[in-house]
Structure formats: structure tokens, C-alpha cells
Length: 311
Image (cartoon, rainbow, N blue to C red; front, side, top):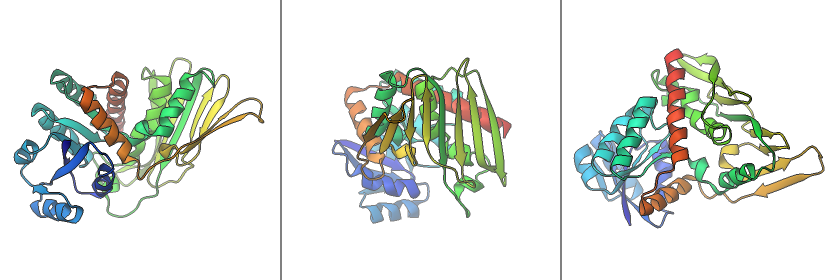
């Protein structure tokens, strides 16, 4: 049994408590928040044994760590946990700096620890099957990927008020870049952004990725609504994953002959967070880190860093 600690007591942390309870090899035993009252209240409300406001004591009490705090805090928390020998699963984006992400994976590797960026879609049954279908060559060579993730958001929320790390692209870009890098690779030649501002952050962004002979588009929105689908275009056919594609419950493989459609349907349990925690527990048991995911995570951090430096 892996004794897991959680940093963060916000919206996703509340959902994660229920999902972690569905993973047989993990027990959520402690929660940390710099605000002691928040930590104690969250622990009491969610049946967690221990609440901490002192980070050192918190980390000493656990085997592994789940980080669900704001984007800008991730690097320091992950680094401290890894240096103390703790496995880490961290909410996306892992960091917003290529150098920082590389350094974290190096620390994990040097200490034979598992570090996972919590991208639930990547570990869901539907997306795994989607990868198999693409790799089988059913649609030929992939030449274009279009992925969209939008959610209308308003109010005094982090996504719209955090002028340093907030905005639509940092919020949803991890998802939209997942299929782009998975099916086209990470060696893009350049990126161009189109953005509509929402105050001091981006409310809607389209990122256009160019490769030598292929291309892709990632659409992310907080103040603009668009169809949340995934379209993968190939030389023999295409794959359409309808909205919300990031849950990947259903997709179709379509060909030149409109009468020929291969349909795939999958169960998607709960909020889907259980899939990433199941993968986390599995990797801890074998001390394994996926090199493809590592490269994708590093590349996403480079893209975010580039985007924010120009925003």
C-alpha cells in the first residue's frame, strides 16, 4: 500500500479524493496546505487522517506525493519531494519552464523515482486504443492534428486573475498538445499563436504548430466556446473523436468510402483521475518512467515558456 500525500485543497483536489479511493494500491493519508485551517477543514471533510501546514513534517509522513496546487508552485514542491525520495504525480502543467522540467526528470532518474505529469486523458482506455489504431497505420501517415478544449469561465478565479501563469493556453494546452506530440512527434519547426485577451491573460488562443511537411492546431478557450473535438487526418483516412474528446469515450475511423466507418466505444469511469493514479501505482511497483511521456512533458514546458514570454 502506497501512503499518498496531497498538496492543495482546491477544486481538483476534492475530485481527486474520490478517485484515489477507487485505486486499490494507494491510500490518501495526509494533506498539506500552508494555511493550517484550510488543511484541517479539508482533511475533516474528506476523511483524511492527517493535516499539515509544515511541509517537512508532511513529506516525512508519506511515500508518494500528489500535487494539486497552482501552476507556479509546482516546481518547488516537486523538487523538494524528489530530493527527499518521494515519488511524485503532479497536476499539469508540470512546470512552465523547459529547464525546470528537465531538472526534475533528472532528479527523479538519479534517485530511481517515478515522476508523472497528471494528464488523465493519456491513461484512459479510449485514448490508449486511439494510439493503437493510429500506430496500426489504419489512417496511413498522420499529417494534421486539430485539438480543441474550451470552457466558458467567469468570476474571480485563478485562470482569469493569475497574470503570471493563468489564461486559456496554460490551463488547457497540456491536453491539446497531448495528441499533437503523440502523433506528430516533438520536433516541430516553429509555432505561431493567435490570441484574444481577457484582461491581462489570454481568453482564447490558437497555437499553430509547423513541422517539415505536417502541421497541427491547438485551440484553448476560457472566454470563447468552440467544438471540443479531436481530428487526426491521415493519408488513408481520418479519426474523429467528438466532444469532449479528452474523455475519449467514443471515436470513429473514417475513410474515402463514406460507407466504411470503424466505430470504437469505451467506458469512462468517474472523473477519469483514477486512470492516472492507477498508472502511478503501477509504475512505482516497477520503478519505471516512460521516455516518450518525458519528452512530451519537456516539450510542452518549452512551448508554455515561449508563449508566456511573448504574451
